Length: 167
Image 1 (cartoon, rainbow, N blue to C red):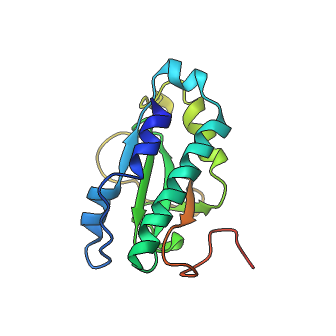
Image 2: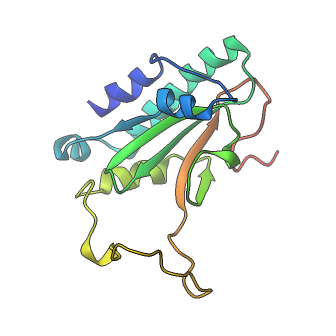
Image 3: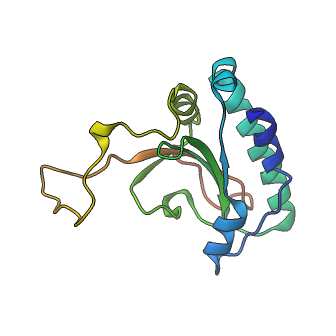
């Protein structure tokens, strides 16, 4: 089912409205899950290939619109146990995340983390902190580690380079 859902993203409604990033996020963001059987039967290369085909289809759609900069990006939401995909009229270094992230041109590690998540959406007790006031961060406690996000340019040709593309 996961591969089918990934493919369907390319045909879903798409909004590219730089002045209204909230509408972009609400319309263009997909959270995909997979049961244990699906996770166990899929390989990283299969899921990566499906994501790359979807990115190519989105790129064709968007470039026909001549809409300017646009990024298709994918991350593993560990808390939700989901593989998340979105498209926005932003460059890879300006994605709408509240925390730190590392843009990457390689989807493999994101997919690998998702497929290897044997308890999706479950946080271990050791990783939880008590509710209440936010603890003061010191130089010794840098906070949560940045998460990896696969990014690929799907906007107008030449609008920017993919992460890791230093030509």
